[in-house]
Image 1 (cartoon, rainbow, N blue to C red):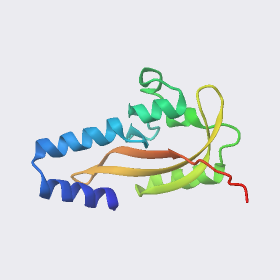
Image 2 (cartoon, helix red, strand yellow; image 1 turned 180 degrees about the vertical axis):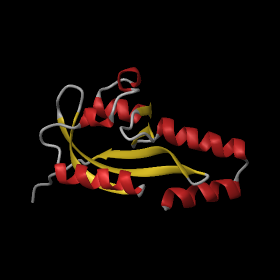
Image 3 (cartoon, helix red, strand yellow; image 1 turned 90 degrees about the horizontal axis):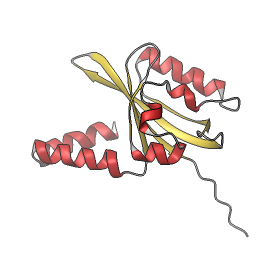
Length: 140
């Protein structure tokens, strides 16, 4: 709901051109990895921002048209993936955390949110906002 509130506030505060510029800046310059997939039964990636390429090591050219499953591996939690699948079926927001894999095979812990993009009552795409969970250790 936070994203929707932000968009409504942008529309009420700024011109549509400035809103578009702000959203483009968020996509291109933000720290969070952003993927957009189509709304098919086996979603394919249609957009990946630079934070995604920095996080995973995949270039946009390598990832476009692929399934986000490319990030999964043997340590990826199947319980979390099952919850994700159910949210995709139910067309509801998903939030989760699991182990994923970078292009070079390096494991990383990822927190992410999947948000359905609905236009005129019809699911058009999925927006995934992802962040690497960094565990820091501080000595006593």
